[in-house]
Image (cartoon, rainbow, N blue to C red; front, side, top):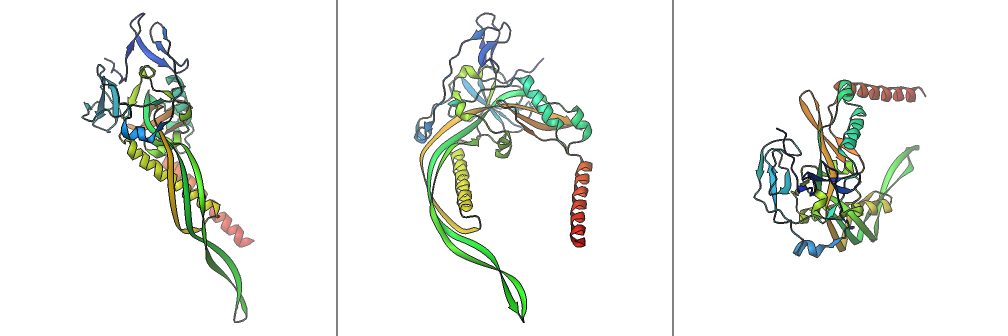
Amino acid sequence: MAEKEQKVYSQKCVTCGGDLVFNPKKQVVQCVQCGNVVPIKTTMTTEKSFETLLKNAPQWQTDTIVLRCEHCGAKAVINKNDLAKRCDYCGATSIVKSEDLPGIRPDTIVLFNLTKVEAVAKARTWLAKRFFAPRWYKKSARAQNMHAIYYPSFTFDAQTFSRYRGLQMETYTKTDYVDGKPVVRTYTTTHPVSGELSKVFDDVLIPASDTLNAAALAKLQPFATNEGVAYQKELLSGYTASHYTQDALQCWNTAKNQMDNRIKQEIVRRHGGNVIDLAIDTKISNVTYKYALLPLYVGHSEYDDCKYELYVNGQTGKTYGKTPVSPWKVLLVTALGLAAVAGAFLLAMIL
């Protein structure tokens, strides 16, 4: 018997009783059996004030529950009347009801543009281009168990104003004479720098689930979060929505760290680098957020009885994952690199 997919909402067609599923090509909810289209009106999402996040963010409806995979820890929000027999991330069947409260409800959905067939094709093209993968793997690898999920994330907007001070190092050379012979010496001096910097941050994207780390999500970006539509449960018809494992305040702290790093980098670039003992005082204002669901296709490839995860951006088709590595190709590239270095050294000696 085929396993039933985890679904947030399972609607039925009033014409034939078939399942209604969101169609990413037509951007409508449609019956998979008779093709009946259910009209749905979408509206653009709006930023929410940070005070809303702290006080009265809307909650998930009472007809949903959270399930947790005991193998990888992934969480999914599903209808109470649906069953979940496997994890959409790792495929494990050890699914249990979580005691955690469902938490706040998403306010933004970034809709799928790609069908499953298109996502599989994108993944296959990406796999074939992996240079360090074994030759046989590149020829035969295919995306398996590819399925659509909505991945939780938070985006933050903010205005910042920073005052800073520090020391800029400057290095110069000077020819000195020792015992009548010229000697080139390097000297370093420092001088104080200070200033002000204003920045506007738009949609700083923070992953809200540890089933996909920040580095992996960065490889799949961009997601057009500014084009997301306001949350409607009908838009999730036929799809899984992963539940967050990092709440909004944890994600906000991560976003602030990213903002601080970008402010520091811009200050250093402003002064040409080599800035030390940098002290920055930043004030943050006009903070807004969105709790957005991002469209992902999740699957894997296989090689020598090992599974390698695959992710496809459901908007753009951008793909990221892991693949096996051929040790012979690594050795060859290393040897060629060493030979190039040796050749350059010999050429420099000759000249």
